[in-house]
Length: 428
Image 1 (cartoon, helix red, strand yellow):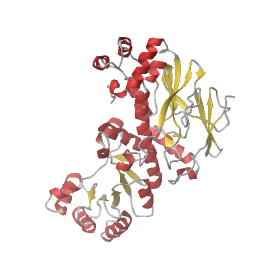
Image 2 (cartoon, one colour):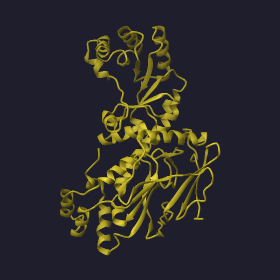
Image 3 (cartoon, one colour):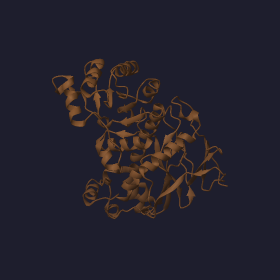
Image 4 (cartoon, rainbow, N blue to C red):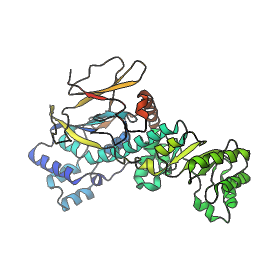
């Protein structure tokens, strides 16, 4: 599903530049823009590229319809010349970038947009809106996956996000290794497996807890999850097993001291003969809370608010900067915001064992390739036409392999240096 409201995804200042460039004759100058982060969010050792396929789909359909153009003219945002240009807008340039699921670090050129100045600059807000959100969610989700140590994670944060952001967040979390989402729109749109259970309201609707459980089991069978903490958790577990029997699939606990309760619940379930009944915990879980439960008898985690808001880093801090005009490198010299001119080429350097050791970036040139180097950019759009992209599951597997490749220190949840150092070298 694509968004066909481009005027709402373009900033005023972008169209100011388009109008002026059309008037002074610079609109068609061949330019290169790059998306990168100057630094990682505090405490993070890597970023995760996510949302690129969504962005390419949006750019493919990026149009200004007559109603939008009329609004821009009426409000004085653009003049007649710019309005005519917007009416005929189609992106005809090239887009290259890191694969979805790739890791990135400060300075990594994760997206390169090439074409006429005007046709590229008008995409800035759209590109940053998609990538800053999806990369932030994917990085948080990847940290949770690491903390879970192979246990299953369910994304269940739709109620804490904008309705479209909720779907994008579910996609980014799945890319990062979550197994399920509770968001049905994400399931329908992207083929992500969905999962969920009844809320406390369903229990409160009935005369007692057993009646609520009996209704759910009668409808869904024993391969369901019963929420047992509406009243008293221990009694809730007893009621759940009394109704469903010892082969109930799972119980969910959404409150309390989860470490203590998980232990007590496992002991109680085992004493009732429900040795195979799984324990799912939820309730404001982030990567630190998940890591703290690593030694407890928890089988599955449900993460909501933290994952869809980037777990304290709701944006990836990405910027979209002009780095080249007609083959000439251009730089911004502002204090703390300086850029490196020229289109970049990047490789990830590895030991023979596969461990990543360095990311090498060369402006306006090609790196001196070594045997275990991996070129990081791929083509997404060529002369305005999108190329076939990896599937979401392929991107998910790519991220899994990337996380395995970085030194183990890079997976720590504590603050530290980027997992892989970045070196910018002159063209050879």
